[in-house]
Image (cartoon, rainbow, N blue to C red):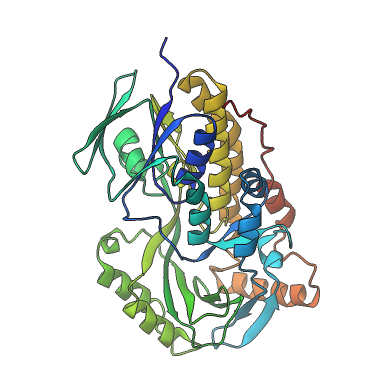
Length: 404
């Protein structure tokens, strides 16, 4: 019988990683977090915390801080191909969320809030990542890119959609990767448009361009998304090819598209990726387990990646604290979390016509619904509003005892 696991290495310091570190530290585990970046990344676009995840951050004592960081988007305006206004809606009409309960905070603000309490309690290894792992059944011997060798009882991969930990343990990403037929690019640009606490979405069939301002600021976020039959793998390691691909899909001289394309070409923070999910037959192997997007990425079309990651971190840490042995904890974690994760993944397959309608018929039908919803502000735009809310609250948080 193996001894209880107490020394845990977490790969990734974005959202799921520090949330896990917080709870594991409270349960008395020795936690090390390795992060390939030089520091916890600040700034960034806003993400949503809703449903069961809101209860998680409340239990962490972070709710007052995150309420202060709430960016409070007031309006989402949709425009047609020529830039003419179609309708303006409250965000909750689009997301199916709940006004006054949902939180919308910058990714960096959430990362700072999660990592802050750990500064003097967990060990952080920045500018490093896992190069090799040897799980002999009793422990995991880890070799880092820096050349350092360490031994841990458990390793948790919380390193995102393109997880290095998952690759080392489960093999290449392709068998688990489900491409949803879209490509996106995000970047910041000067706020020359007078936007504040609002977003504007331009559409043509299969394409969308977005301007999004969290607050009154000199900068705002630009986004492009478009359908693409196959993943553009040849562009992933070539920023110039990424910029060229995006620009080819937005050649019009309409609306603010020329300025957006120009800003995208000039941006030093371009984030380019495909819209996809991760579907794994199991989330653990031996003494290694996956969490967050590494285990069950939902894609931004679902709008639930952060929330599902926060809930998963709470459950995984709680099950490790509850069970004497990691294998039982991993099994309990997956039993609880998999239905919740899959329910939220399913939101992406039916909601993409909201932001990026694929056909002219879908676009015309969506615009007609937008106009009706604008006339009735309490109307939830999506016919799946009840389904979304059920997914958001789809896991009742267990009460795990704090043992130390």
